[in-house]
Image (cartoon, rainbow, N blue to C red):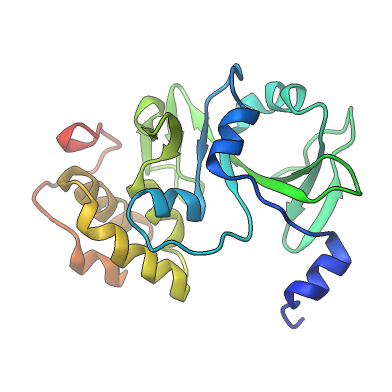
Length: 219
């Protein structure tokens, strides 16, 4: 099926008016679960070129879904999977392998964010495409102006599967600001999930031996 134009998309699913990172911080202020800005906003906070953001990705732990649903009880949550949407009604269980939830107040309101459900086990974040790539949860993100974002290396790892033009631009903008430890971690992670990835030639190889260990340079 041909990709929908933005106008056709909005006619079918409704319009987007994405939260800014500050809006997200206000929405989740005091939430009893961790959360992190992901995607394009996180890339921009790490040096990627500024651009218009069509949505706002917010990562939360899959295990925290009950608490997330309670916190957002004033919103409607919809499962987003493979180009389809399904309302997650009160009492409904999330279907297997679902990883994304779109959020809006009601049918007359715009979508405001896309919740990315992130897997974890025993205090470790697990990369969705290969659980051999992991990080301690307390090293998954960083604070920028009081707002939690995914670490730049984690953002780029998610973008690496099939980089679009904007993903390559993000990589070029973020690379000069990646700490040495982050370059090493990203290179080692790519060696597992995308061993021939062209980004690897641009990343430092000062360290060896990826085993999900804490990142060098105190990331």
